[in-house]
Image (cartoon, rainbow, N blue to C red):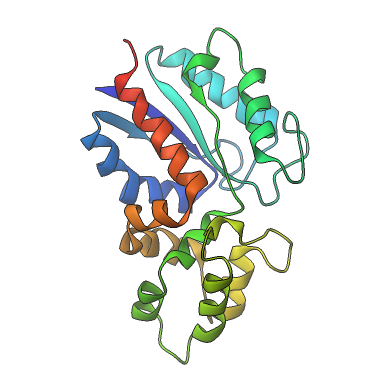
Amino acid sequence: MKRLIIVCEGETEQEFCKDVLQDHFLKKDIQIAYPTIKKTYGGIAKWNTLKKQIENHLKQEKDAYVTTLIDFYALPSDYPNYSKDNIDIIEQGMGADVSPLLSHRFVPYIQRHEFECFMFCSMDVLKRNFKPEEANFAELENIAHTFATNIEDINNSPETAPSKRLLQCINGYNKVVYGACLAYEIGLNKIREKCPRFDNWIDRLEQISKSAK
């Protein structure tokens, strides 16, 4: 069985790995671990801090693969090849900046734009979990319809990021309380269907089970 370490931005992503991704990858003969970024107590870190943790994991577990689950929203500008609108070249820079002796086991990934975009993948799940007096379902449905072809395109300005929209539309919304639970109920298949960039990441990680020992 292969070993995969997913370095998570915070508790919400960590719970998502535990509740949603763990069983999926076990079926693919991949065992996962999901530590949060050290020294931040949840939240994104500057690149040198994250890079050090990535390389430490790769050095300590010489057969393990490492990936990241971090948001593009509020990503520090010190990340390699930093760009305000091209996540792919940032990921390429991250891969190139990790030691060449280790980088073949590193799969950099940045979620566009936030983990919270997953919540817009199913209005049915939102309606089952919140009462009409708690949520503006009309606006939530309008947002989901506007970005129906790719939920990940819900943009990342301070006012219109997915998390900000949820806070505006759902009274008392808390990502740590609701995020992973709602994602579990929505289901991995639905999220992959609505979020092509995320789907591609899962595809790439599934290939680990086929890599040479």
